[in-house]
Image 1 (cartoon, rainbow, N blue to C red):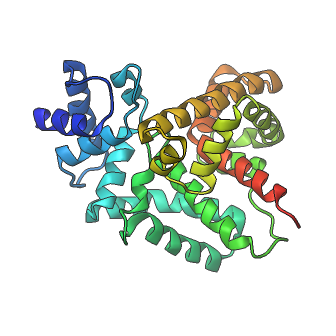
Image 2 (image 1 turned 90 degrees about the horizontal axis):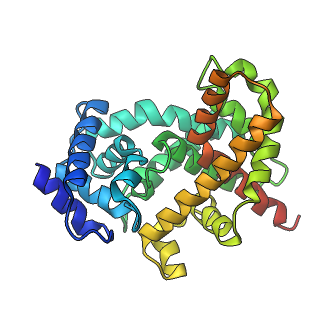
Length: 298
């Protein structure tokens, strides 16, 4: 199995490493086994998993260290869902879709709206038409649940654009959504909502014009990393690296400013920072999407 994993990975990656190192082989082997433990019953062949990992791998730097930062368990589930594995689809429905419904409810809490957008979301992500299911666009840079929330929110906001008076999800609401996942942190919501929105917006100013454009294309407009690569004449892995760097820039800037703005004990602050990182794409999509909406004429 190990040789198949490495060979399949290297056939897809554009890493300068021409052959698989022992470290890469060991990482892929353990990542596959860990994913099987995380998602028991989900069936995905080792070569298919490794090939998908290779397709999203960065094209420079320490390959194994970069891959360790990827949510490889969630990539396993996404790839298995795209392949139509029934156990994977059941796991997606049980663990991911309820989180998507939470994000949709922030746009419109009516049960009919949530059901409609959830239906559209399933088709968008899991059904192959003239191209592979869109869930394969997930790059593993954050948890799959939060990436799906971004897509769900984008679908909901797109539906609402025909009704200009509807109020879309804002950053304080994003913080509420994230805090709701952790009952121990939820009591700090009132203290964090407005400071988070302020320092997050300030941290976004640390991004270059290109980084903001790429994040907007990827998170708000739903343009794939491969398509963005064609726009900039680079490989999709380079785009994935740009997205990762931009996310890290915003996270570092927000963390630093938030530490100055609020007073929490070390444990509570680190828990908040962890939730903030997990929900970063959701926050970015909210801010970037609001920037677009604000720029449009009445």
